[in-house]
Image 1 (cartoon, rainbow, N blue to C red):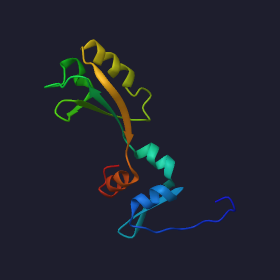
Image 2: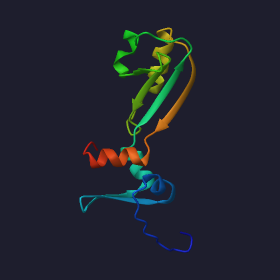
Image 3: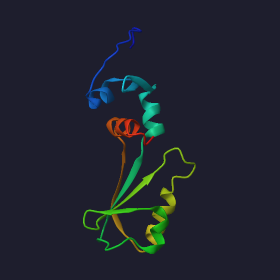
Image 4: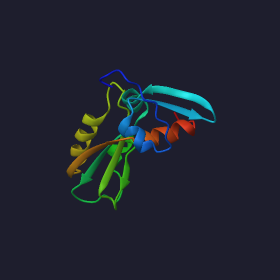
Length: 128
């Protein structure tokens, strides 16, 4: 890169492309369907999830939190919120406020982002 050299790598191993590439091209059935900077592609098409580890398990999601379309997992010990990173308001601040208002206590919060492989599969399946 520093010396201005371009290397074209073709691979079926998406993890390899995610680690090494600056730009990614997707070919489906012999047709180039996308060429994009990897960081831009992951920002535009990737999903982010906020996982809230609860202090006490929930049997169901409180009605006050219904508008967030949360997933309840790990035996009621986790709430998962998928959000759009490009939205003006992600809803995270409101969710945390409403969790407290609903009396839901939590131990930890973490975020995860879609991998390049998940984005690739969605592109090929026509979901993005």
